[in-house]
Image: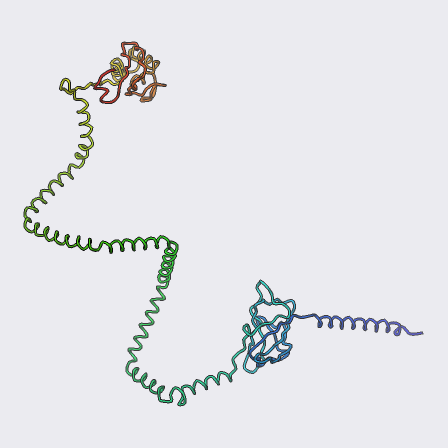
Length: 416
């Protein structure tokens, strides 16, 4: 029979094999996770090899799979983390960290939203860039030196002459050149300090041009009208020329007249100044005369009686009130209310009942507010309109109200 150690050895080996298989499966599964791929075309790919880094914002997200020359371009196949999203219009740049280290491919910019780059997409040459090599820089400098050398621009000594002329012009003009540069610096500083005003001027000019553009029809109409006026003036140029010639002759005559009558004109102007001064001082009186004179003349015309050759008038100093009302009003003004005769109170009540005008004193007897008309009656001082019915005679000998014409002609004609 197997011992205790042998009984436990077999299950332990089986468990070990099982765990190893699971670990290998996880590693294989993770290794075989599909990644996104993109193809970029460069004009050159110096220092880029399969296995070189693919980065976003300097962080490694993948690697270069293949670098294949194709005609004048280089096809570089890249792969990166499938969980990472790259903008659909991304660019591919070859970045040299230093002169001697390997280079990497940078995908830029970082994704911030919008459409993403599809799996297997291509980035054309127009969206890729490769750094300039040191040999290219040296070659460009060498070509520049050759262009300026004896076989180039200086073949006939033109460059040497330019340098000599420049030296001769600058010789002894260091202070002047310094002052010119200092003035230029001051001018630029002034422009910088006044950039707010400068920009405001430009902004206002832009608003003006915008307003002109929005008022294009009005501006066109104005220009058309101006053209019409110019055309009309051009058509009447003979008449305008004749008018100007006549005006010149008239001015000459006026000048001669003023010269010959200077003293008389001076005296007349002085007198006119006195008259205008009086008119200014009496301005209110002149205004009052101009306001009242037409009415006075009209009243005089209406008051004239051609039959008798007289000016007829009819005065009504009591207005709409009877003498008894005025007597009672005087009593109310002179005595306390308790000592006013009862007839005055009865008169006031009768006038109120008949809806006839009341003086303020009689209204005071009836404890009415001063100046308020009686209910349904006419206000104090009013005259009944023509054609109104004549009320019955009021107690106390009040005359009945008659039909009257309130105009001056109606007053002059008397009662109808």
